[in-house]
Length: 175
Ligand code: PRP
Image 1 (cartoon, protein in one colour):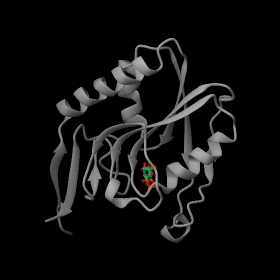
Image 2 (cartoon, protein in one colour):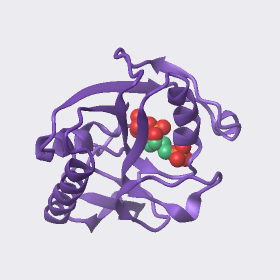
Image 3 (cartoon, rainbow, N blue to C red):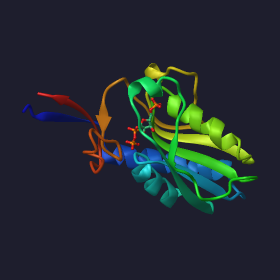
Image 4 (cartoon, rainbow, N blue to C red):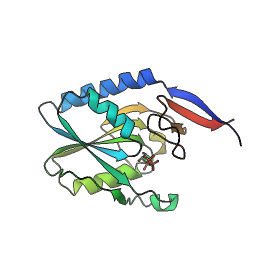
């Protein structure tokens, strides 16, 4: 079996600095408001855990888990939910927190679904954005890092459920 090679793309110290910057901007934008953060499991759990500890506004958290299914089905952009949010978001300020924005199919479909629950506002914060990979037009209001089209792991992101624990974002390849 070939060995998996890992190369650091974004180091822990740079991640930490950028997450603080994002939290500062979000705290300013939502000053005087109470935010509900909705994390998309599993990938977003590390980013969200760091982000909330730098926010200076009161916030609640909830999570959604999307059912995974084959590439053919994903191309329709219709997602199914395996664990829905448990908080009412009607009339509330909502920030969806995601690890990576890639084709945009997941978030565009989730946003349409959440809008039906009638939040007062709904914005998106993604840790990584692979803009070159978009299949549907989608922009997040808050972006940690724009990255090239490379397979990345770490800081919550996985390859076959491995490497989520890595503190840096790494590119992997077989050597
Ligand atoms: C990844 C990521 C996003 C989605 C982005 O999830 O966390 O949810 O893919 O892709 P898209 O923009 O092309 O729709 P994944 O299915 O790997 O699940 P995970 O979060 O449990 O790792």
